[in-house]
Image 1 (tube, rainbow, N blue to C red):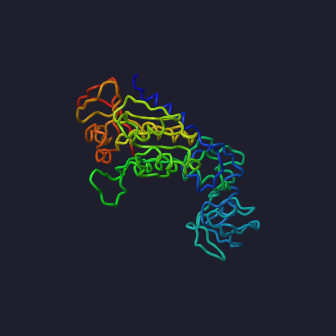
Image 2 (image 1 turned 135 degrees about the vertical axis):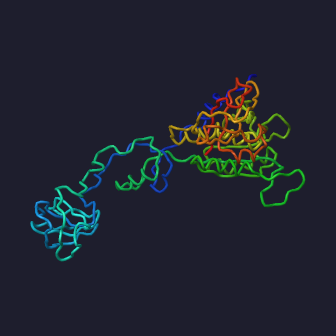
Length: 397
């Protein structure tokens, strides 16, 4: 059987994960989520004419000849609810954001006065409308202000709050169980015995899940035992939306993930890529399950290529792929025929758009991945590239 293409497996994973449900959440829980319904302004912004300056509310006609000295009839702090009309030949001291009193048609900034409190000397005239923010100048009541599909950032949440909205309709974050298998795995901080290694995939993948905006639950140190695998999963089946495993999917003995899921609706395949060839996807007890290879670089590259876009798509993001750029190689490299290769690299656009490969193609070279800021994508039909050749780089940051 010929290997599955990267594009085919990416599509399968995206369809498997699907869209998350829509729910109404408080604004403080919406950062980074995607709006699921248009927002129509329930009021105008500003909701009333207000002062853009600390100064004095005036009738512009009273400042025909300056300097002029006028009585201060009232003080208007921000938040003042009851106002008195401004009588001709008087002023009212006003703070930034405070409502403009009836009868006033301009505000003189305090710097153009002697800052008096009983009477004030005004040194410069202003035109009608000066330093007044009129009601609806920013947003009019009934205006469409946010459209479905908007990614909610601090500024958009600030706008929603300014409109008096306490909650928004959004697609919720997927809850992802990250499961690491392997009897050889040991928790960091404990001593290693011969043949053991510290568990790293769980930490790496759970962090990647959170970085993508989803919720990660970690299940580590599942031994290479089919019954133990099923028993470990059971408590999580009603608590998560997606299961992501690493390890146990190759062709050797003791491939616990493959053995445990072989009788379920999970398809194991070889994807035409390096690293990350062995992949699996399907459903376990109705839940989408994505099985990634166990070598750390293979697991993380697989997450970047398949899982991260699916998680972002499930939350309603229109842009699910990392930013890409075209760059020239600082050194040549080779790639296996018939497989898309993802090499680790350092890309600095300020240095003439050159990308430098970091480390070799080995799927165990975690330090090279940690030092990289991009993946260099080599198409499956390309087997050799020379220094100076142009490639596509996929940002990791």
